[in-house]
Length: 177
Image 1 (cartoon, rainbow, N blue to C red):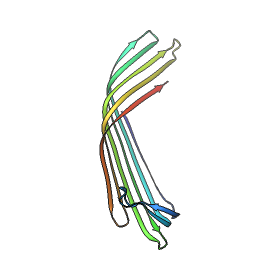
Image 2 (image 1 turned 135 degrees about the horizontal axis):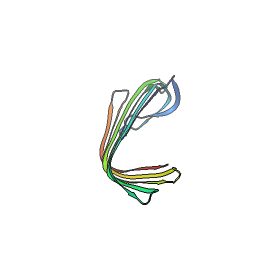
Image 3 (image 1 turned 90 degrees about the vertical axis):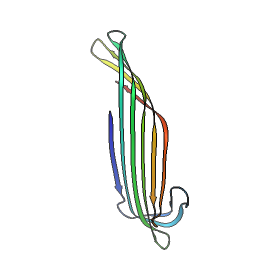
Image 4 (image 1 turned 90 degrees about the horizontal axis):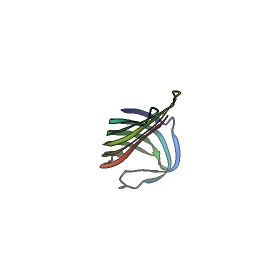
């Protein structure tokens, strides 16, 4: 079982003048990005949370070729979940009139997959007690990938883009020692 979690966030320490730039209006492209001069970012906060879980259930059989060399062949199932959340908020002024703007963006994505797994572990042990091993496994996962993208701009217009698709992907493990 693999279980990994991570989080990272940050803020802009002081206002930053970007000069000319493009400010997105909606993620779906209904309103194209607006070109603006004198863009000053007053506030920029970001936060990213990531998680990965993977569980392998295996059944294996050891094959002894001789006293020093053996292999373990295994098969079973594998489950994997990868999730990420990104939140970004920025605000400031733009244009000659110093028009206020603010944009809040949230992206949530998750993949859940399950499928078969096949692998082999090879071990060679010398007479002096020194051993070498190589391990490899391959999995084929089928599952759903979901993403939700939400953006709110200065005028409190919220755009939402959501998709849910079936994805097939592979997983591989390899170790030498």
